[in-house]
Image (cartoon, rainbow, N blue to C red):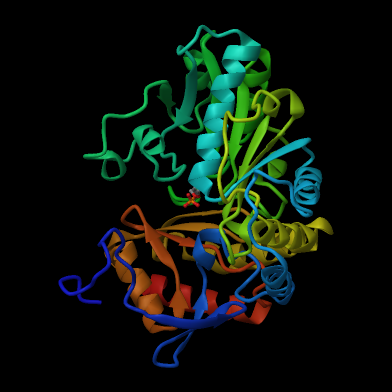
Length: 393
Ligand SMILES: *Cc1c(COP(=O)(O)O)cnc(C)c1O
């Protein structure tokens, strides 16, 4: 698309492809060319395009009822909250729409909990966040990003956030004060390039939060709902946070659905009139969200992601030192740091596109792979062979 004639604000720089339809792990562009989707809308499309159970749930609900607002109850709302809470082992749910809104909700809940329950002095609460974080695009959220591109020209920003290095438990411990309400972190940093933490780190974060009466808030908007081979990434590290922030795949790639999920002792600080959303928890969102939870209940999708993830690692590990500087992977999710001699991440993604594979670069030389968890083994191998061919040159 020519940016001088486009009527779209230029806040994205998409790869040169115009997609017209999609099914399963494949998309078709306006010229009829089929491409393998190895991004899955940043994990929002975890179950593949047009998953029959999700489409059926959405279609049935479209004809029945789509929105009544939270001024009234509707017949799916309690069921959705119970199903989602049970899936991750928590008592209460606040439904929202986008990931950023759910993060904002968690921030508000953590601050209110700090004042009401922990006894922090009014307006003094602090939330500790991590270097390399990505939690969305609202002004509050970009204000505590450490990425200059994300922040520049959008200030002034909301105070009350303290930044520490991701993966450094000693730095976190040193930053905790009696005013600390919460530690907000991604158990795996997706946008930063599938960045993983050192062995034992997340367990230590959990311990520090427990000892210092601080809420551990896990932003699992991208890492959650099967991607890591477990229902949530925290499970892969054997930790249980106080609050989960979920989004992306929760809407099945059909509607935006997000939620904060946590224990009653924390979420009950919100009372009528103190927080809300016109569309949050709407019947269509609940119908799709319930169908998503149904798909995850047996654990088969998660096990499949773990198994396919082993194939992914087996195919890509030999590239380290031969086109890749580093490979990070968990479940069916990988960050590939491309050797700058092979070109930028963008150039590699353009080459992949020419070979029929959709992937996305991040931060210059990193490529993120997150194919649908429903991808067939043959399609995955086909895509990985193309990645290997491009990366190894
Ligand atoms: C995508 C993302 C968000 C923001 O979600 P939106 O739906 O785009 O607002 C928040 N946190 C993480 C970890 C994400 O990956």
